[in-house]
Structure formats: structure tokens, C-alpha cells
Amino acid sequence: MWQNDRQACRAIRVLLASLFHDIDSVWTLEGPTDLAVAWLASSPLSHGEKVMLQIAFDFWGGFGKAQFADIIGVLDGRRSRDVFELARAYSVGAAVEEWIAKKAKDAEAEVMTARIAELEAMIAQWRPLIDAARREHKAQLELIAVLGSSSEPGARETLNRVSLERAIEAKRIAEPK
Image (cartoon, rainbow, N blue to C red; front, top):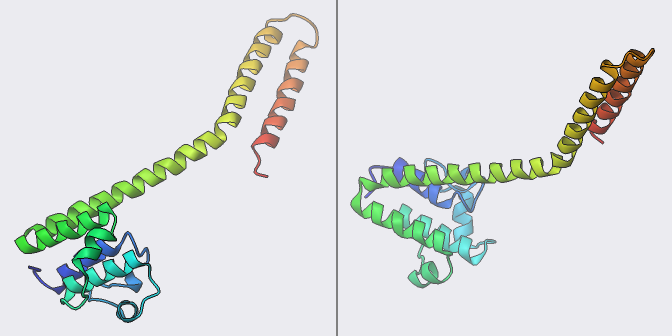
């Protein structure tokens, strides 16, 4: 059982959050929005989204009319598992808060995993430039070692000119296009 309507809304929002990224347009902490009610009556949603919305209304007041066959036949494994886990937590009562906390943690982990993938893609994109900069730095150090130890007249000026040219080239490469 729900402790109160707010807990029911929190659990339903967690259940629907993976489908509706703007969850506030579908379900608030006070209950379903007019849009959710309209979608329940006549929906532009996919079959799976419609089933999840029906389940949400069944949890809310029992009038979503979700079919068991749709829960096990239409929903993917993760969503059907979430529905059954919430139903079990609801039947226990005190377990609802644990379910909400676990799902919030799972959602946070999904966001972090997606962010890590984005960062890895950025690193892969920048890797050639980083490697080129490392090679350039190594070449500069070698040039400094050779010219810096040279007693040849003009070696210092050559070192400064080459360093300036390379710095200008590195800046040109690094500027966004």
C-alpha cells in the first residue's frame, strides 16, 4: 500500500521516467496531468508506452486497465521487471521507499554511464591531436637539447625562431574550426 498519494506519485514518476523525459508533463507529484489523462483515452503513444501509462493509472487508482498479457508480451524485460518489482513493493508497503531509492540510484548510474561514453568519444576524437602535441613536444625538447648545447653562433636565435613557429602552428591546430 502507498503511505500517501505523494509516495504513489513519486513511485509512478520513477516508473515512467525512462519513457517520458519531460515527466512533469505527464505525471506530477500531485497526480496525472491532463495530457496523461488524454493519452489514456486516445493515445499517440507506442503500444509499450500506452501499456506503461495504463499501468501507472492502475497503480494510481485502478482505472488504467492494463492487461497482464501486454505487461509480459509487449514490455521489454527491464520495464516488466520494474512493474513487477513495484507491485511487490506496493504489496509489502514499507518496501516502496526502498524501490524508489534503488530505481533512482539505477537511473543515476545510467546517466553516469552515458556521460562516460560521451567523454570516451570525445577523448577518441581528441586523441590524434594529443598524440601529435606529444610528438611535437618531444621534438622541441630534442631541438632544445641540440641547439642549447651548441656553441655555434646564432643557435639561440634559431631555437627561439623555431619555438615561435611551432607555437604558432600548435595554436592554429588547436583553434576550433
